[in-house]
Each structure stands twice: as C-alpha cells, then as structure tokens.
Length: 204
Image 1 (cartoon, rainbow, N blue to C red):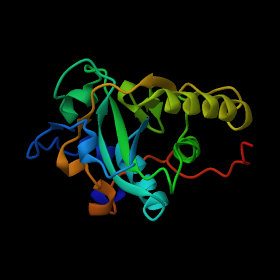
Image 2 (spheres, helix red, strand yellow):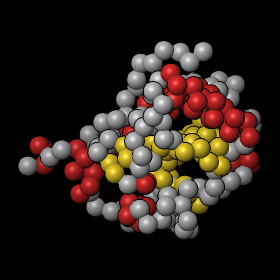
Image 3 (cartoon, rainbow, N blue to C red):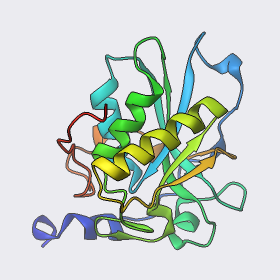
Image 4 (cartoon, rainbow, N blue to C red):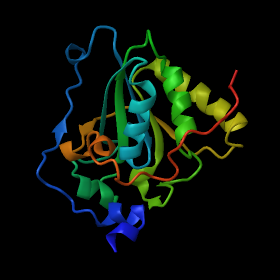
C-alpha cells in the first residue's frame, strides 16, 4: 500500500516530529563570511526549494541554505503550528551567498523559474498560506531588484498572473533540524510537482 501511495499523501501523513528544537537564527554579520549576503524566498514546500537551490548553486557561490519560517505573527512557531495556517508564517528558504560569484538577481530569476508564482496560497497540491510565493528583501537594493525582476517576469514569462508578495524580511525562525537537507537525507521523499526548472527566454 505504501509503495503506491501518492507522494503528497506521504507528506500529509508523515508524523510531526518533535525531537529537534526550533531556534531563532542569529541575525549578525559576525556569523557570515566576509562579503556574504542573504536572500530569503518562499515558494511552497521548503524541502524541494532548498534541494533545487543547493543543486543549482552549490559550486556557484552558495555558502549555506536553511529552511525555516518567516512572515508570521508568533514567536517560535513549530512545523505543526505553521501547517495549521494559524501563525501566518510561510515555509521559506534563506540562502547565504557570495555576491561575487552569483548575483541576487540571478537567485530571484531562478526562483521565478523553479516554481509557479501564479497560485495564491498554494503550490501544486499543497494548499494554505504557508505555501504562498514570496520574496523577503533584506535591504533597499534587494527590494529594487525584486520589484524589477517581478515586473519583467510577470510581463514576459507568467502572462500577468504573478501573485508573489514582496515584503521586508522580518524575524526568521530556523525549521526543526529534520527539515534541513530533507531530500538529501530522504531521496525518495515528497517533492512538490510544481518544483522544476522552466525554460524561459532571457529577460533582457
């Protein structure tokens, strides 16, 4: 029976593990490599988002990638609470990168290629505000790039249907440790079917 169960059901039926504790990631430049920057995005189930970004940028300036929760209205949200939709958080990815090797613009363009930004509070079979599409900028420069790229992809790639929110990054909470590198550790685990790289023409 388990071998034929749809992948999205295995995600829904997987127990809510409580062995790993949630922690607020330190927001300090001292914890980053010299010159490193952060980018934070939400694109549905964070397992597949992390997996795709690691695979694409692991040798092109990616220092680290952490899955977690952002955009909500409570402190120390658990996975169970976020999945209920009651906390307002999105499942998200925060990457630390070397801007000399990969630009923030490249990361945002990849974001718009690897998921469907036209579905409100949903991604593939996953439904709920925690699966919304969002860009959470860390400075005015990122905000400008996010707005410009969003405008262009909305016109040229997604036919005016983009619903991605663009917001200032607020408090970030690392997800429980068993979520980190989930698909690396569980190769047969659930991956949202909307997470694949589209072939779009260059924006410029």
